[in-house]
Length: 424
Picture 1 (cartoon, rainbow, N blue to C red):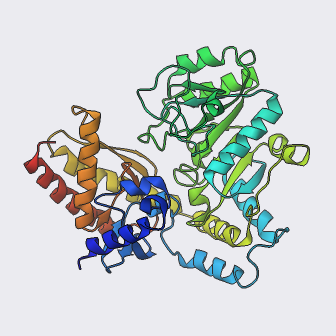
Picture 2: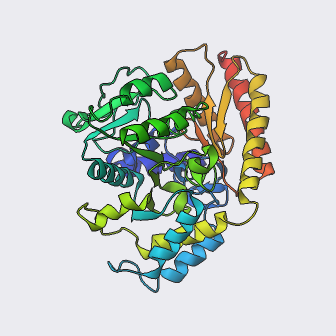
Picture 3: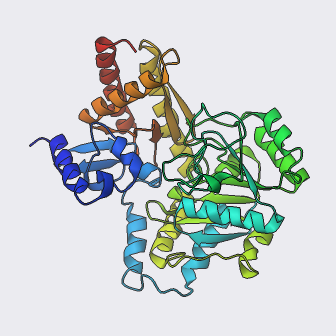
């Protein structure tokens, strides 16, 4: 049995007990089918058949220091025999929090929770409580978790201020309080927020670099103007940094762009591969949980995950970490673009820090773009490189120059073969 077949058989068996055969829906889009992994270390994974791959999935973003980092594993292994879930206070709650708050400019308090979806909901509740308003401004194509109240207008074809549901079975009433704007459209947000009080706008919810929509950086002045407008209208500015946080800079988008939101939502890389998220920001907003705003969750701040948070933050605080991460990410971009530039259609890459996204040729339609990337990731898998179906590419401190060169060679072979079969 070859290695791809071992994953296919595992996928078929999983489909008989797990809905869709995957634990998160988008994993089913991996081509030719989901890869089933036996172990992972550094920037590499091994499938059930023992084949090793260079990994650019990286847990869909969390493993910023690589898989199974010894410092994180040691911290977790020390904690597990001591306690798991206690439902009471413990010292890691504040030790880990202090490291996060020290890393992110303008944050005074945080709340622990378990996923980005949960953290976004907490942030919105805090904003509504503080302002006494209900409506939320979000941006087309921005993903803020799967919750009914924000899962909307994910397609570029969705225009206008009215939110469009993103899933079958979604309660349409849950998105009635959403107002939709276009990312980087300064005039558009000025028009919407000009009467923010009258329009009952409690918060602006924004991914500062559109992490799930092609890795689009903010144009100069966009975030700054958004901050000004929110201040003028008494609107809470929320940065969804579940992906960008601790990845594009230690202090996330706040550090990189010099704009401080009222609240930030963190997840993924905050714990280096363990399940944990946080809402951080102004004390006056966060401290509402002591005076009427409900913040609950059995697993919030559990000691095992916070051991991973503390260990991850210790690693990220070491001198030279982000310089090294930027260097390997820039090398990846430069070397891969050299390959792309020689290919018909000239595919591209967008990059902010260690987060990249494949940019398909502009002269082909959306369906053709989708088919192209599906063909790329399927062929690359056969050459020992794992890529995401979304087009996102995650680098880590564990990726090396050798990993990049191996990936470049695989891209070159893949794109040459695909261009011979059908011009890009």
